[in-house]
Length: 158
Image (tube, rainbow, N blue to C red; front, side, top):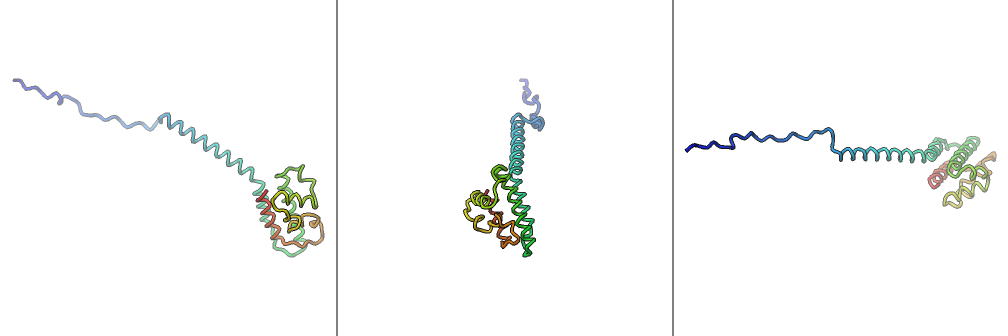
């Protein structure tokens, strides 16, 4: 009998498929990339909007912190009170509008400041009363540090 040759011996060896290519990515990766780019753009826009909205408050606080309130000389005290009053008016005009704030002075201004926060007496009876008619006097008896703390608390609440 004739010997039959092994038919498997004529087969070629196993060839594994090549690794998938990294480029071009699958459609799912394209979609995920587009979504991530859109989310990053939206987040950047949102952060810029928030930063722009809080700029007047940050500017007010920075200008207030720059003021030197450790003085006992009356001319410097009066100057600091007027500077604080000007900064506060600028911020109030920005926050509440020119029509609401610009006509207020004296007691009406102090009452407006009290009502703009939950404090009912910090400006009319507390250290903030100096922003009424007292700021135009030749002498003021006020603790500038307490006044500065009051303005910082005020800007945080409005």
